[in-house]
Image 1 (cartoon, rainbow, N blue to C red):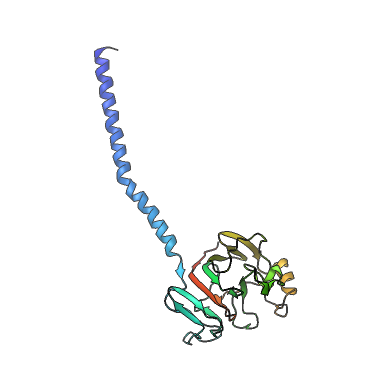
Image 2 (image 1 turned 180 degrees about the horizontal axis):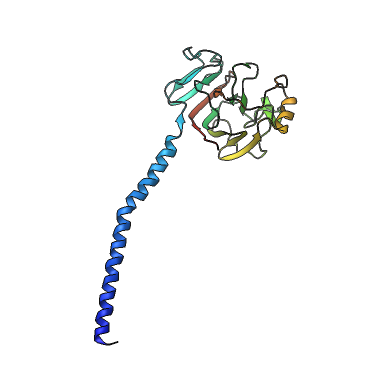
Length: 251
């Protein structure tokens, strides 16, 4: 290469370096905006969740079948950041003030030995004998319940459909994490990060389960209902925390 070509080559390289530097600067300047968008998206997702328990009160809950301003029984206590169902003290079933159609509900729970409790959804106050569909919570390993069938054990659609046999249940005294997802005409039960039951409202499987249960005298049991969330009072001791819900938009 001659001297003049070498000079041109150096100048071309310098020009490319300058252009490349401008590109780097542009990326550097737009970087925070991209990260900001991601942060905003994450914040929006987090904001989509609404706590149903503030850790210190029973605000947002009322007794089942009673007006919103009715006092909740003494069997329910908000203490130390937990919602505590006291053993042997009447509290009554409680429901959210708001009703839900398509939603994702999450909560953490812990039972005392031999205890039995549950969370119900698609709750109707026109049908007090069978108010809703129960996500069962029970001490599966207790001799007290050793004659129960799978449709009455933890994470079942109580009395109607059983959960997966290999569900990841933690023993009494430890915290379990549960989720109910209702989207369109489908419902899911989750336990400790695993989906253990999925069904379709009003399906043949649900109809068969209902027909073989104590709910068979209620013709609409197993169909989808827009209603509140219920925490049941089976008189046994139970603790709840991190109860939250988000509304799902279906298309």
